[in-house]
Length: 158
Length: 158
Image (cartoon, rainbow over all chains, first blue to last red; front, side, top):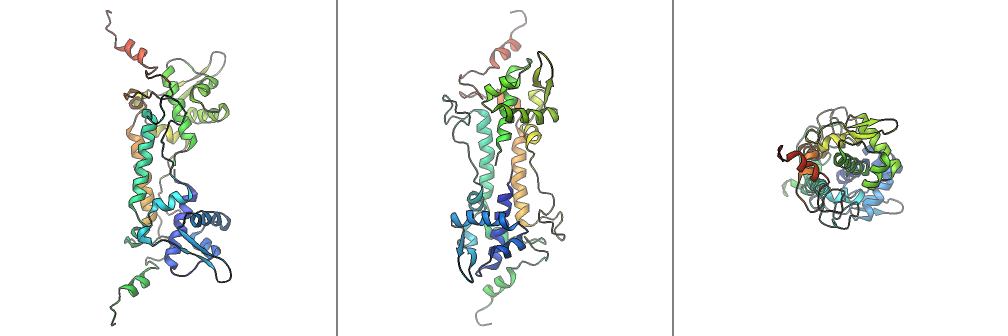
């Protein structure tokens, strides 16, 4: 039910967050996320088009996140690459149904709404901040964001 | 997030329920469910393989439901044609993660679990019995099951 495209997009966005504010090349991202480069390239294009990722061309160019992790929900990422298609009108085109869905499609749409809600409630920052021995994309138990977070939170006169 | 295959399988099963105990041909089902016959044929094969639909070959043959509507959940139908693949181990194959999912995959799996639960809780009978002006697959506001239900519930000495 979750497409490969969604899985790959989420990995890419996490890796980009780890490398902020530095730019990442597609080949670097492909290696870190274990995604075939050609496939990743297409996924990144969708993320760029939707304004989630910024792409800088030319020598020393690369990609970076366009939106802060606190403001980016999983739903934003999912909808950028493989949108959740809520059922608004009868999929069979039955005229007498129209927007009044039958019990089947009403039930299916409720399930899609559940999914949408779950993705809307989680931000990228939530995922990155959650304590766990399994750090997304990493063999180590320590988040690549840790030194950055420590630096940010260090006393100013230290 | 819901595949065309799932949508078509649910339509086919509902149409088969309407026609119980009569056998239905693929072409009849295709017309009623508005599904391309070749596609429907493949979907029906999966439903037969999983024991949801019984197929009788030969002259006068056709298809019928193998399981009573009260005992068939939407999850049974979904899993017969396009199974919900819960995330049990790290999709990146990171050894230190194994079955201890990281916050990303743990969150994704929880979303799949929500979907699975919603489909498990609804039986085919629930869908067919739910009162609505929009009857699944039908232009009319009256369920094709109504005469059958009335017959079943008619007083014996009527």
